Image (cartoon, rainbow, N blue to C red; front, top):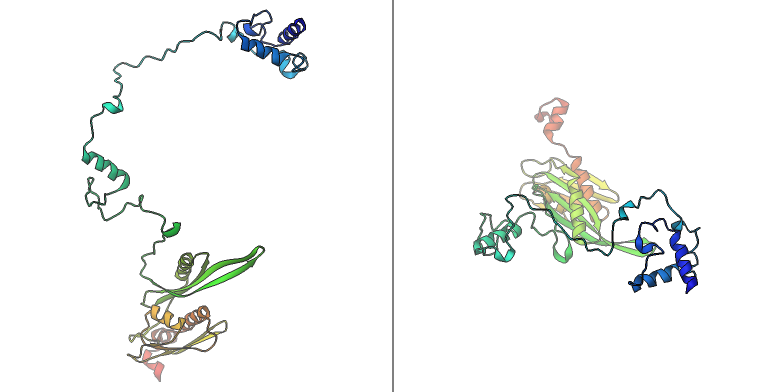
Length: 312
């Protein structure tokens, strides 16, 4: 027991705060606190921690740059009273929640309408339109968590020509996706063909519609909603032949050629696929054919002659 007390005294003498904290002073009696006595005995005993009594330990070396005068008059066992600052003059504490006056039904309905929008009952307390949903409250997700895409109101109609399932061979196997071909037009001489790929059919159609809006061309037409002259176009292995028709003939064509002509607003025309039956190549071949067409007034203006001279 004497050797243990000597080791405790040697360890405490190496601490820099041995003179400031009374409960770390070797002469301070810890018999009144058994927990503190056991802690000092276990942590500072050479048998438990051999480095505790060594002065070469960094945390046991004395430090002269630390000011410990603040702890000279501090008693850790003293109860310090809490003295909050005095409230300013004229301060009135708010009433408790259960002491507030009860809210009316109209006030509750107005509060819910401000947060969630007009009620479905058809009554509005704030004067909002119950048939118009607020943009902040409008749901951004649709069926199966897909995000709803609003079609732009630019006057173009969309027509899906083909949706195919395609695969891409990667290192881990095959990656499945969908390819969609969409033709858009305003039926006033403007048409566009687009293609898009995505993991979902809806996303593929939306991407192809955006691509079609980037490739819009103008189709020259006469007052009878037909072509001014014949034209041929090819794209890849697909070849398309377009011929004007008399009023009342209608659009005599098939496949993607018919879709492109209808979305452009052509009502009387003849079309024929001469090469491959690929829907995308035929649609683009049709666009190439209509881009070769020119109005009679444009040709006459370039030649510097009246339009009647073109038929001589």
